[in-house]
Length: 152
Image 1 (cartoon, rainbow, N blue to C red):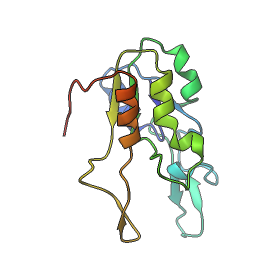
Image 2 (tube, rainbow, N blue to C red):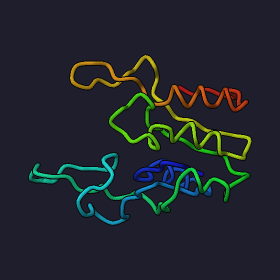
Image 3 (tube, helix red, strand yellow):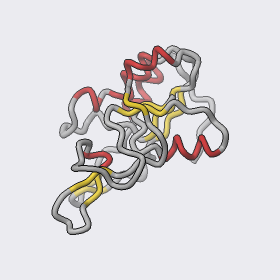
């Protein structure tokens, strides 16, 4: 189960390989073409004229849902891909805490976490921005999870 699936890129890639994925997002984008005015900045694309923002189309079907819906997937692997950074004060608290809350609510025994390398921080306005996910790693450790495999 993927919480915070965004436009569903990873869910689509996994589904194309035969993996059953429940993709959830609190504000999933539509599946066909750019949508109406963007309601979720994480799925936004600039208009062709550069005057506004529209919602990026989804790569696959994504259900509306989030952390509270994890109870319906007790035996699933929790998949988190580039979760929001808790240090991002521009995002609402429920968004910033999404990864930690999902890990805490997850009843399964496995979590797959895709995060930025701490050595490859994104740059915004000429300054390094904290990579997404360090709080998720802390939440995994606090939840008793252990690193089984690291891919680079």
